[in-house]
Length: 296
Image 1: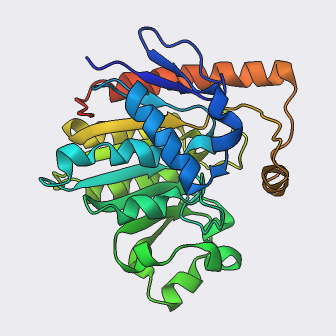
Image 2: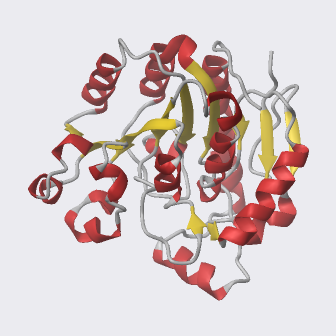
């Protein structure tokens, strides 16, 4: 069985028995939230050296590191680039398909995944963020939506603007998580393509876990139902969304973090919330290890 890997940027992930822990604390300021493409390439080189040849689910800490998923997905190209295309299924309260002028960040990485030639489609499940509403429509990168390579599966957001410009096919709206999950599972019944699963726990409701970000409406059983429905197709996975704190030295990141309203968390509260995350991680890992994963 391939071992779980912890990319330890922020010391937020609890102890996972037999996991391979890769210390990356020296990258926290540089990579967290966002970074230049040059810096991202440097991290890629270090991961190439430190990641095992074969591994299972990767835990990356805070959702501020979700863009690292792009590097993990790119590693699959050696296996699937010239053979069978893959799909990427992302659980996230945000589209992560937004414009970012300073390189790549945790809210822009999905558009890069959609551009990979061996990725046939990207699904983002559980969005309730106003990031896909009219006020933020100009921030969304529309190309992968128009090209039919990206679908938003969303709730509670008015998306009439998208229908008016011909994007009805890319926005799937639902009244409840149950309806969303049921519809997604139904669309996958005859699909045989390999799947990479990426989980940001801000997709979960606050009565499940507390994160640094605004959160969605899903319950843990909704995620587990989708994972189980994908069955033997899963060839890689990662989990992010741990709750953690960091005081940036960069004025730009301090400003952007303040705009996202990430408030300081008391130490006792932080510890309690991290214990909640640890329990959820254990259940997610138990579901994901039931499926074979092929990783470079």
